[in-house]
Amino acid sequence: MTESTWTPSSWRELPAGQQPEWPDPGALATVRERLRALPPLVFAGEARALLSALGEVSEGRAFVLQAGDCVESFRDVTAPTIREKLKILLQMSAVLTFGATLPVIKVGRIAGQFAKPRTEPTEVVDGVEMLSFRGHSVHSDEPNAEARVPDPERLIQAYYQAASTLNLLRAFTKGGFADLTHVHTWNREFVASSPAGQRYEALASEIERALRFMQAVGIDLTRSPTLHEVDVWTSHEGLLLEYEEALTRTDSLTGRPYDCSAHMLWIGQRTRELGGAHVEFFSGVDNPIGVKLGPDATAEDVLALSERLNPHHVPGRLTLITRMGADRVEEILPPLLRAVREAGVPVVWVCDPMHANQFRTPSGTKTRHFDAIMAELQGFFSAHRAEGTWPGGVHIEFTGDDVTECLGGSEAVLEDQLDHRYETLCDPRLNGRQSLDLAFRIAELMRST
Ligand code: PEP
Ligand code: CO
Image (cartoon, rainbow, N blue to C red; front, side, top):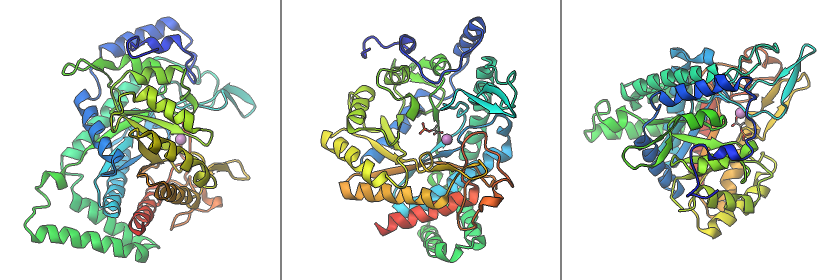
């Protein structure tokens, strides 16, 4: 289909991977109508502001941090959970801002990240076969076959859960919680209590001196809006096309369609085929769009995706989120970077160091090691350095909570500790302190190159 034949529902004529089989078409149709009548969650003008911020990233003048849960849980839509996630996101951003000496665009995997693609359609729990868990916007995570039947009413609940998360995010980020001096105090507390504190001390002290300098020249750190308020944008995998279509609105200012379920949406590694429904749907909305690229991605795929999703070469429109694996990133990434550079198309390159570094422990727990995550990031930075392209950002799965899901970090989580607090509903997340470790280590990497 072409730009002239696109409609919010033109994806329906193409194969759509990873969609739940909703058992009752009538109930689904009713839910679709109800969602259509609800207010948009974000304003198109905000999506345009993020687009222009990402445009700066594509030109090497900013960096992006995209982070949040693998899948949000309806049970975690609570003030403490949202606050702790935001706090870590802000702390990481402050460290990265200093590392890059550039603005850091903050994008949460939040307020809508409720659906998952799955490799296996079913799983067996205690000898009973049931549908694999696809997220709370589809069904319950309870391990019984009945609870796993898709229920479209959950799409409505996802909308309200996203709305209340977004409301609190807006309150925190504009109401003073995100004040840079608070963020810096939290970082000092982290450095003081971390076994790697001495290593991070130099960076933290430099940040402190920069803040004192600003005060000394008369900047009121608590009043200046740029230090007191931040923009945190929302994003999720645009997986359930029924939901994304129903939240698509025509912007009253430009007359253009926007998917108003989030500021940014990305297409997953499993649904990025050119002739598929997801690429069709996202080719027609004007939000900034991401695409995940796994180790099987070719230069031809990347150029074709760019042509399809960003035919007018708008800077910031397309973010390519690479997840190649620590062992292979330096072999697989450079040809893609070269092809895009030679084609001269604007792209934001982001590294997801999580999804290709996953393994199971001998006892069967899904995990990732901090060192492999760091190694993929190192490979990403060095591939970009070699090709003369801009390593535009990182994309991670984390939580502010003190979970034990990923191994390692400076307060190393050990294999026999994984079951202490293993709470994720899908992939293992870095805990708050591992995430801050990562931010300091990335900042070191950026400063050294
Ligand atoms: C994810 O980001 O949680 C995910 C499923 O990633 P990918 O599409 O890269 O496998
Ligand atoms: Co994941």
